[in-house]
Image (cartoon, rainbow over all chains, first blue to last red; front, side, top):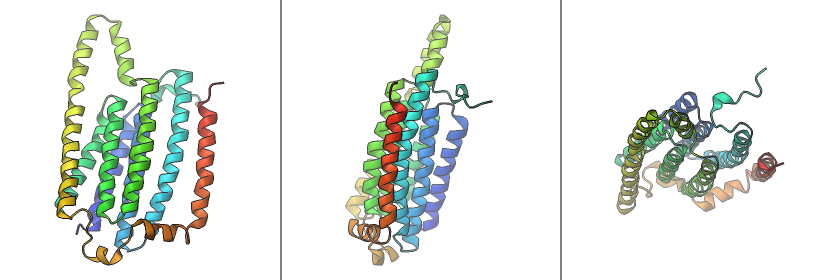
Length: 100
Length: 181
């Protein structure tokens, strides 16, 4: 039986990797993938704590998070496609339309 | 415990592969490996239904969507670098040589990780360590489709229905954003 804390540590490491990915990469697609990885790390936390507290609520929350992630990916990738069509780049530095 | 360490290492290295690969395609495939490993983790956590949904939604739908977009808009920053250097004659050769060396490690890493994941899952299934609950988890007996469905369709019926609205909004939004005027 693996202690729950190990899952939480792994989840924290994966979340940190995702944060580092968002910070160091310039490609908007890879930043997006890093965000997905962070979402997954949090999902792992929920599933681990669901087992720890012997409650299904955590698993239901993971399901909700997955629905949100699916909708978010669809809309986000549509935005990426629009940006690429207008700017012809996936570099996040070149996307500054909202800058004053 | 042994299985957990193997899966944890695969997940972390695959995560590093996502953020360190130069090509978005490799990143997407490393992401797939990361998601698959997390599905194995869900099985270890007695969340079998979540493991199935993880494979179907994340590994199936989301990664494929990423791959579609990557293939629609091309290789990303590596292409931009190549385009600039190819104008400068000699430097193009150096750049292509460097990139061919660089492209070596993602494949090798991914191969090793994938074989490790398969071996780990196979070992876990054969010895029963992966899916047979121990300790408090045995009494829990949760995570099966019945248990999740009973909770989802009673206590969480309203949030469940609201997710359908969210999906509809997401679908309409994606169509509106991505259409050609």
